[in-house]
Length: 211
Image 1 (cartoon, rainbow, N blue to C red):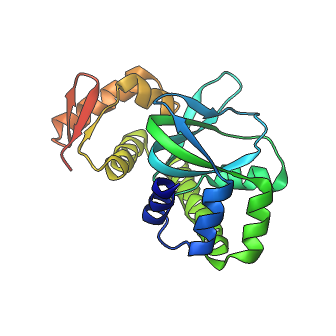
Image 2: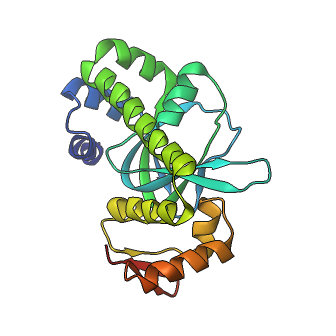
């Protein structure tokens, strides 16, 4: 489809023409709704994921179903989790869901293996995807290990600000608590202090960043 080829060219401009044609031929285009779960913890992964439009969010889930936010997957990016699980034929260790209506491409295992050998642009893209996600995880570990909760909240909000390209973050105190593995009471108290220091404004169901 011409529309799909143009979308791939726009979102993945480093891909060579032959690779884009192969993606167009072999990938499955799928629509994900806001809040729809794409990958469950423990699910068998049979395809890697490329994001064309929208936004996906990746979580680590504990045995009780509590979710800890890890990172976003934006248009022009791939899910490193699915790449690793597909190549090693393992089940998912993370939860992935849409936080906006999204268009994604599902890449089958046989294509990934072939493309790694045939297309330098795909090989480089996969390596850069692994590197970017590893750096994301290092930042997350640093925040957990070395920062106070108020610093973690600020880092968390800045990450959302950067990805959403907006100072107005549509999120509640309870959602922040869930994603930082804390309590609503702790988050509300610290957010109130941030508001008093002029760093944020707290609105109903969203937070406005002033830094």
